Length: 340
Image 1: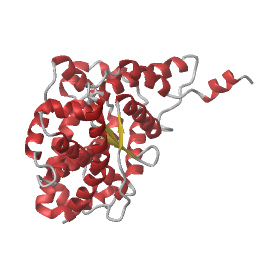
Image 2 (image 1 turned 180 degrees about the vertical axis):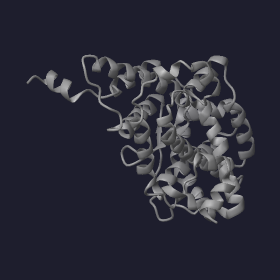
Image 3 (image 1 turned 60 degrees about the vertical axis):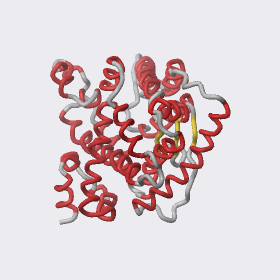
């Protein structure tokens, strides 16, 4: 039996991740021009602040005491592209059906190109991320984007980079201090991807109304069968992002002296952009992501104000104590259910 026949029977990968990287590499825009000495200072500062930030996050949240403290990885835009693709491949491994048939390679390649376009778009906007799904967990800080945002906001470099590290350090702590969280998150993704077997054509007929109502392209094409796992995933993502947004501000001016100015200007910047940029952000779900920060932070503030941080930390007890999507919008309902 020939190798090609074996490949055909086994099916090809659903996404050609190598092609995704190659596509993104061609489309990634260069970062801001920074003198070498200034770049070295920014990179060294980020590595140190990633450790310092997690110390502050642990003190505020009460999570993670005794866990090892690790520096973050400072990367450029192409470095983030490779890391993002690696994380996506690890997260979706086995969850997406393998392609089969005469056109399997074409479908895999098309998906790779599409993924590469999205990743390239995001590569100029992502400040950092924590990826729990590859290499035992990686905290990534995208130096050119952090420097570019800091310049655009006209805020102190040390304050802004610490503020970013507080957010990403919170994400790292969420996954390292809550041992079941990564597996649960991956399970929700697998459940959503496993439900995507109906195709999108029937739902495209109602496209105009859906486009008006949707929070992004992900919401746009969901079937009823996909709604339940999608709601769970959105609720979890909203909680994680909102908790991190709350913590990065709640640590306070003792750590980030200009935190009030940074938050005000950064929030305004999230809403900005030209018409084309805003359309792309909406289609890719970035606008929905912005809403997640605000909704999740409001949930966190409400619970912390009424039950304290220890009361809020009940969310991390088990998957059953996570808030539902409805409870994110009604935190009092979550408190009644979890702490009657």
